[in-house]
Length: 64
Image (cartoon, rainbow, N blue to C red):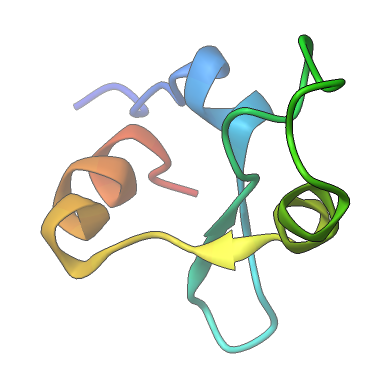
């Protein structure tokens, strides 16, 4: 059986924590930032974990 391939698009968007959870960046942080409050932009800076509903699918895209 051949080796499984990592989905490169997923590898660029997600990364694993030391405990094996998968973290992601927040959306809405790239452009049209003038109208968004500073408080909202500050909260969007920090990465967060993916939801449980998406976990199985993302783990399948990142086998290693």
